[in-house]
Amino acid sequence: MIETVQLSETPENDLGYIRPWMYDKQFNAIFNEKRYAVIEASTKSGKTVGCIVWLTEKAVLTKHKNRNYWWVAPVSDQADIAFRRTCYSLPQSMFKPNLSRNYITILHNNSRIWFKSGDKPDSLYGEDVFGAVVDEASRVKVESWYALRSTITATRAPVRIIGNVKGRGNWMYRMALLAKSGEHDDMSYAKITAYDAVDAGVLAIEEIEDAKKIYPEDEFKQLYLAEPADDGGNPFGIAHIYACIADMSTNKPVCWGWDVAKHNNWTVGIGLDDNGAVCEFYRFQDTWDTTMSKIIKATNQVPSLVDSTGSGDQLLERLHIDGHHNFKGQLFGGWKAKYDLMLGLSLAIQNHDVTFPEGRIVEELECFEYYAVPNSDRYIYAAPNGMHDDCVDALAMAVKLWVKRNKFSGVGLVPRMLEKQSSWSIT
Image (cartoon, rainbow, N blue to C red; front, side, top):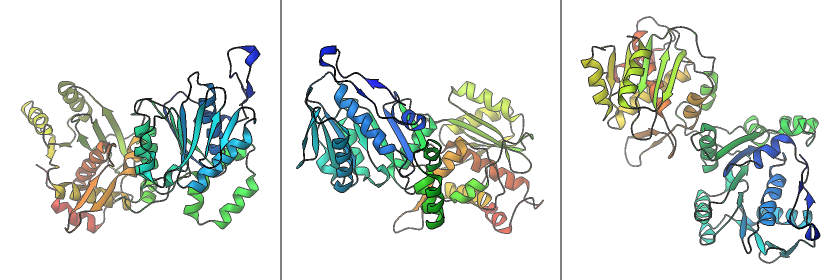
């Protein structure tokens, strides 16, 4: 992608330059209209140089004076790399570097691009920032991200969040999930693998194949394929989740799980066929009356579990008053109820007794977490802050009914799953 960028409105003061070439996937990931762009990318795929160009153009093209732009890296040595690359790439007549404080000043408008370390989050508060890049974001402290985010509150500045993936227990991974979900209108997501860079002529295939022989599988996938390794905080197991992915079944459902919307959540309905495959999937937000109508129409008298916690109890009562007794309630009150429900879903996934299609269900299963409560025997199962687990809950309820239905048939079940059945109370 080559484009002549005009830096002045008057020809006599023309500071135009030719934007460095970028391949399409690299360019589209960085140069888009979204305020937040999250880019999980292979090492040496061009994410850094592309974002140097993006941030430099923000500083150079602004018609305002004295604005600040930030490049934030995990440690100062990594920020120095971007600082040096930026200095090498710009005409000497365009900027003045400050070598002791790691910033450059754009001469025609006095804008500054700072190259900062995220090692000390407190040092990032206070300034107004008009554009930022978070480099190697999976290794940047979450407190540094919070500090940077505070600096763009008044300016509403755009941010590019880039890096190799590094497990799933970091804020960049969660931002990527949020961007992929489509629930934030001003976020974009892109994945750039080493093979994308090979196709673009940026990397040599022989080098990638050599790295594949040298690195452990998980590390190669993270560095070159932008596939995060399992950190161990997922109750289902990432490999087991992937093993259960299959096309949506065309069979009719024999049971349903419904997680009904409360507040800003979604109503999700998942139907399983006789083989434990997802064959129906609904996700929507609507009024209670419309929600009830949709649920009744979708289930068509098939046995169904519905979340009867809180306001869900009113919906269940209305369903029963109207004669729809195929619905039973599932209480989520207290940690033990959800623990038992998720244990059943974990067993079904780890035994590969259930299948589901790519998309929203898999995304929620991937980010779902569990952790032990200190000084107790309790475990908390939940989505990370800011994420949803409606699909997980609906699937767990459908699986619970499916296990109950097949308890004596032996279809895809093992004794330890049947033993847990006794603790699953259906109201």
